[in-house]
Length: 235
Image 1 (cartoon, rainbow, N blue to C red):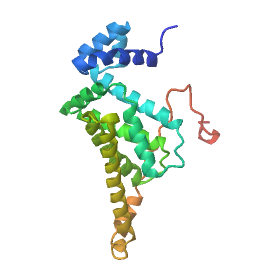
Image 2: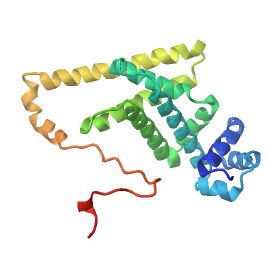
Image 3: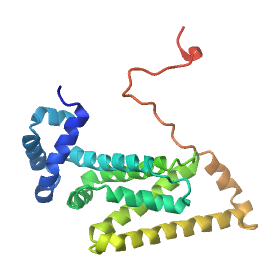
Image 4: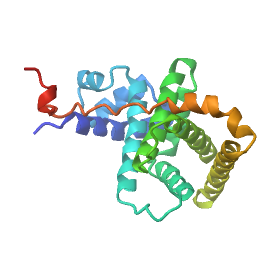
């Protein structure tokens, strides 16, 4: 039986990693992966329409999926929120199979023409973490939590890339400090909200902020159909 598209994509990614260290996320790497994985170049083009940039993004997405799978089997209920975030970010980094692939990806996404792809990848990772942690936010906090975590995750990865300490101990200490910074900011925001003088001044901005809503989750598109209540069906 022929491989599914997901299986073929996984084979190409696995075959690409040994080449990324030498050639980066490039067309040469994708061609070598096709050869090593015995995948037709036309099939690879269908899977990665933009070539190596889509290959690099698929590698990043695979890391998000691996993290989400691990978090799903981990008991997080008894952890403090900050400890859950710490564990999730650390897990996302620990599931990375190849540090050099991330280093090369960081270089790729630093290029102006690919910067938006890099930012979207970071946002998707942040969203994947908060989704796995069952974030209940439905207002502006939905956005601010993800934007803040983008900074925490991105800076921690950059630190990790240069970390030579035993078992990345320095990276995890750095992560602890970044989360502590975030918690300090959240505490300050709470103090401003509850301050007897500042609270009335914030009434207008707070009302406006309360109008912001998290985006609706789109229904899955990889299933045969979507059920609709009878009253929503056309007559």
